[in-house]
Image 1 (cartoon, rainbow, N blue to C red):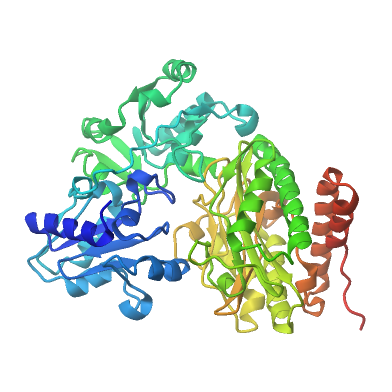
Image 2: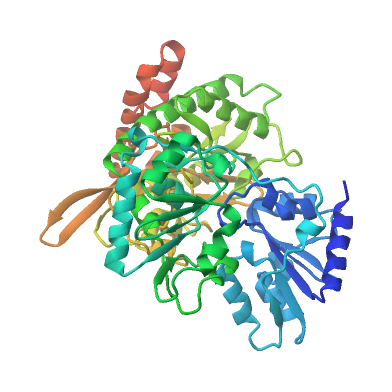
Length: 601
């Protein structure tokens, strides 16, 4: 196996042969999702960096990697002998890789990348940034396969039917609904590139992608047929027969661009520019009208149906049982000298695996002790793993994929005695979580309008957090799945209307660098509340079920409404979970969910 230095040298030699000044490699695959198969983990092979999000730029004298703050410590360690430098904000003056290229690449040179793994939106940004320079672009440049001889093959999991007992709607109904919406919008075709869109529309799931039950595929939805591009061996005979009856035609995955280029040029196609690669976009006939927007399956699946909602309630009970067993076990074993961040995470995953309909974790479990908790999405590695000591704050963010739902929950607990600052911080975060959970708002309200509710108590005390407050959650699909989210308003997701049936996370936080992090996350489901002369109003129901650490609460900072909410929530946690416990575990849960009272005047 070649070293990273040798891999870099081979790539530079190919760049020189092709007269390339700068070559760009992202951490994505042709579907531009959050997680990718090993075949597309080019950055890990090239640099040794194993984080899920990064971009590298290589020239003849420079090799840099850009990632986000959750991976800075990990990247610094993993890149030490790679020939690549970590481009932290202090080094880049907060420039992203496009800014760096614009500043450092001379006019008259050539920039290349593999357009199959860059969105059309991103390549447009690169071109726009460099429009004043005489730069030559090659957006169809694939160099890696020539120097990666033992590259992993593409995954070959077999698709399986996702029963309507879980999802509630026959695939024929979903297809008909999507086509009806297409007719209303004057769309002849839809290009589906997001795997979750295809899985939802066809009521199938797979095992090609880590943490998400997806099968690698593209699809073109037309008025009479659906062209499904995937390896035919992935579709069992019974499923293939059903597909044939519904006009779903199986075609080789590699033929997507070619078929796309042969569509009638006088027709209209809908696609999402964020999830459509530059390569596929440029295959569309020149005279074809292109509508760039969210796809119809993305919009439809964001609103959960009645069967999905009922199943979400059931899966939250099973998930809550696993979490209760875990936290009981943690308290019993906390003085052990062998508990580490990694081993604790493995215990959570193990207890979830005992639950019915469990498929696997919905993301890499986050167990962050003391200062590691100050990294918003820290994930322990062999290099960073530390023992859980007898004193400090422990942040645990975890979730599960079940056939009947997807979970994501964060709890922060104290080991030992908390300081007043820790209790104050925790209570202000809790106030934000509760205030968003109690929100009542008119139809048409967007996530950016609700974000303030989670931050208000923190802002009033000069505190804040740098990430969004909530993300959409799929149904046995992606744990991070829009279009909806709750955040400050920088992205399109936070400008999406929050609708009844949407499942969203509620996760305000605070991070004190070098000390600890505090985050409290529940999933909340939007539902219709009432209609008045001023319009229809919506509310949230908190569906996650796990106790909140009362020993970290400074009760004097909560008002009576917040205390009432917490007591009501804890009563619900006990009522729904206690039937699954007995003896010491049940008594422990009763104490953890007992009422709190405001301090005497």
